[in-house]
Image (cartoon, rainbow, N blue to C red; front, side, top):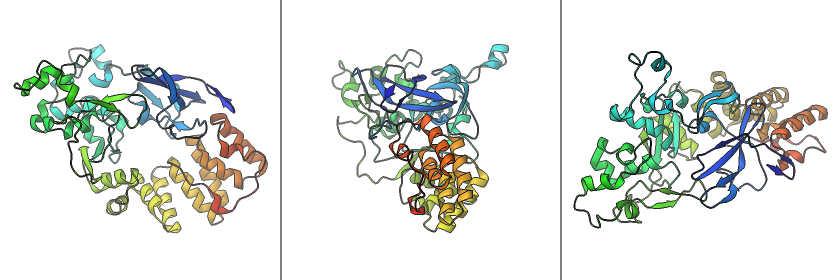
Length: 419
């Protein structure tokens, strides 16, 4: 991909090419989403998800393991970084058999003793977890303390690793299948007997929806027609352009929402609704209710401390919270950048520079620490930082403006972390 200020290679692509292909570029082992996607159904190139409102060509959207986990198998992330991987970054292209059937190494060595997982034979929660791992994004996904989403394996309960929250104001997204189905009258009436495999033949994706509908609605009208045409309509997704997805809320009256007044309240679709998970979920959405929930969490872990710090108005208390968070997890980019800003504003520029340089080790395409370092480092050192950054994101207007000058700015001009 070439543009006015540089170019980037199409190192990998993400997607089946059914709806589209989004491309990734690799530099020094770091992976970034490219801002252009090929949309198959419309036969056109357009902005990639997340880049729709950008006014410049940016190459700084990190592909972290939680994003890549559903598009590739056996990832090789480098600990202590946000988006650096081994060479190659993953060992299997796409979704491998082990995603749904568990690790196969022992089965190959001793098939009789080490059985593969058959999701259809698992109890309901473990069975559904296999599908949910990639077909539910929800309004927020919060990892449990000491657990990581990447640690889930087929046969486990996903709720032991993460909590997924849905909102009654949720829009239709590409991966809204699970939360929409859970809200449907059909699912509420059928319970555990209605699951993804009821309508989808897993390996061939053969559609079995009509048989499933008539199994319950034997006297349904228009039986010669496909029930899903009216009751599971395809609508435009809100989080990706040029594609439509099936509405799994199964409205009785086509076009009518299955829920009433919208409150924006979060409800756990998977996992628990404790103060920690709810607080982090609301914080992720920028909802003011986050502070009340998070202030009750004892003991507070690194994720809670980070969110409390971003909500704290007193600089000294915010700095203490960031420091505590970094003692528990020294590689959080937001904590490194924002604590550096607080240090610089009270004259601790050397300490601030160390934090911003550490942030760039986690992800060298973070713009905020580069903008900040350029204001406090000697001109020659600042130029090195700027030129290094521009290798990753050469189209950055803000950073390119710094090339002619590195004159110091007032502390108020320092840039905090941008989610």
